[in-house]
Image (tube, rainbow, N blue to C red):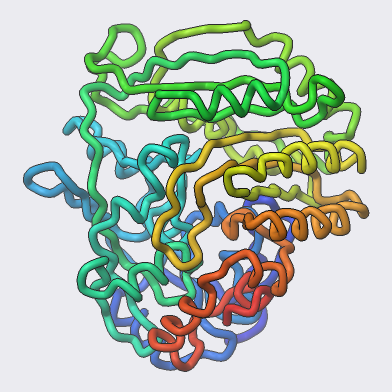
Length: 447
């Protein structure tokens, strides 16, 4: 294929870029033929391109996006599960199943995520503590392996393949479809209580003590001293019966049309502007507020602005998301202090309480605390700062989220993910010729 056919790809953070031959959609048999041919540079399936780093890039190789033609969404007769093609988005699935009093049991922060991407990252939502990651609800994964064979993976029939694929970042094969159990609801409206809390200890205590199904906290990433880690906690639960006013029936998924964000030539975020924004956001929040809101407003607020990542300028941004186990929450304060002290201009922070880990060999969550901090990518001090924090997270028994990562080193990655040898053994069985490759995989020694 001539060089002019290659295209430049980045992740959502736009801080890394590489060139690949973009292909798709294809018939399933064409995908199998491409895999069997073992093209130079390898093959990678790409969903919506919403991984923040280089997970959905394959420099010099093939990237399939979308993978197959004629995406499908099939609700089971008893409405207990849905089978969806890998390229179908969460928004499309919700639009199909919500009128039948069902929702997807795990809803990450964007509705544009694809089913295949969700499987590859083993995504979590605001209810991870109560309901785990998406893999806890997946009944079957249909996948093309490195020999071109079509496999059906379930926890019962192929536990190794299943648990290597969920969270495996697309490197065990090409996901074609998945069957996911659904959560019954009577309404897509939620009752949400928001509380403004003065410091990190109060925020941690509130998250630890919540009895709501959904909970997340916004953190002021620029506060210091006694106000370090102050923030706002949101706790939500589905209404038992719909209330009028937001959705006429209570059983529809019709998010408002997103406004297009402008692409700016320079990053507008500086230590000063980040501090002003965070301070204003904290101070304008009421001490306590309870109200009813829609599913899309609660889970997918950032989707209200299409392409909001372009507002941060051409150099993009990095999201540093980690989890540390119970008893290691002091790391959260260390990270907040470090990114502020080093003038990294942290402009957005979210904190979650995690529950039991899943069985995925490379899945991210563990019982403990997860913090995500967004910072502009242009700061020359940032790589050294984050590398020091990587070491602290690893020494505390924590790990970095691969779906958000753009710069982790392979040695510290191996220290964070103790089940890496098991994953590698399964990948060797599924892809003995090393067909499936990605920039993230090469960087971390996964392929």
